[in-house]
Length: 329
Image (cartoon, rainbow, N blue to C red; front, side, top):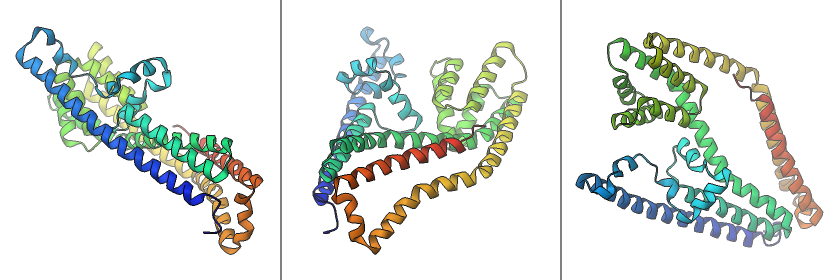
């Protein structure tokens, strides 16, 4: 423990306390928001059943998302700041139950926890601000990774879903019935998205609007091709089953090219991971072999500054290498 930086134990305790407080507040916030949303849904359904004139639009309101309106005082902020307008859309794309308020609470909590910890360890406001910015970005990075993982899972199952829809149409079923078959027999997340499209058009939303909303939720080029082809076919006619077969074939061929590209860029990815982990591993090894030699880095101001600069450069270098090897196909 004598090799740890000054106030390290206090910084760890403060970080743990803030993190636990944010998690507890987020759980309470989600529970309270769910209770309020259930009461609001019950009120709307009662208006539909009774046919009250003041609630004649309650049935249409059932299609609206209530998550984005969970914080009344945040609505003016969300309306004025462009970066916050698509937060709920991003959470929906990641298939997360968080509301905008929970996401912002996690962001501010992570920023405070990391910022206080860095301030207690380094006593440097600039380092604390940089660390707080890094902590604030962690919830967004997590949601982005969840979204990317979900889109990849959808993309892998999408050709089979298109084939199933094409076989249903070729067998004489209606397009809406084919959507229901895809929703019943496909794995997640394909079944959930197609079930939503089927239920939206079943409850009165036009099939064109439902498909456009699906393309907005699933930000894939293949999905936009699929939706565009279906909408054009509904306008001008044609053999939809044959069109779906060609779309499925095109997607599978693109998968083949993408896997070949990943093989060609495997060395670059390995180099990026190695360059990112090597300094940390070497520093830890030197600390184990000669702790007094490494403690100079965090006992002196210039050492702490060098560690901060090195960490920033490591992150920048990792993302630069990742950008170089990330080839869109």
